[in-house]
Image (cartoon, rainbow, N blue to C red; front, side, top):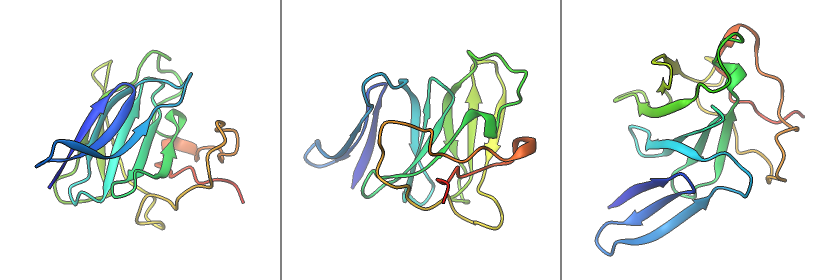
Length: 149
């Protein structure tokens, strides 16, 4: 049995009987702090939100980044730049669906595009930049923001 530990500087999965970390994912230097994280209902994914309103989805067994959702993918363009998620809630029976509770009281439900049915493919090794990500889809559609090919 494992449990998730979330701090603004890291996400960790602990072994519950030994209270020892099994996997850890630290936030890189100069990256925004984590605001919240939770397991998906099937415990296969971890949804994490950040102070810059980015949402990252990790494979729970390896803590590898599965996909990154940029704020422009779900927030309207006229919203304050200080608005960000303070809580992430996983749908109780749909493993790929999550809800974000924002600092302004707004709630957004995110799910992958119907054609994808799951949250993206693992991106290539990170190089400290998000400039290799594709532009978000129009009209606030959910996106896995997969790297350009």
